[in-house]
Image (cartoon, rainbow, N blue to C red; front, side, top):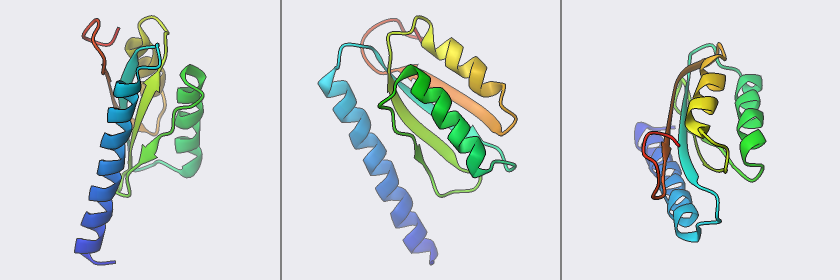
Length: 116
């Protein structure tokens, strides 16, 4: 694959993620929406990404994580949940995994800033 082809694929993946966020926010299914980004470290394996996906689905069974093709990969997902203090809870659980380098979480809809 050429650099240009990889760049085009990353741009397409980013566009899909942005569209997913826009649809999620526009539809407003009732529960607050959060954008969660999980940066994996270089030791990550498929089983590690599956573990993160399983953890996220405990909060939102319909959530679908998009994983970039970069290395180390980064996962992006929009989670709809009524879990109080969701960002703090999910960040603590994901940060505890050895394959996760960094986690960020932000509430997308109006409401308490800083990860309600």
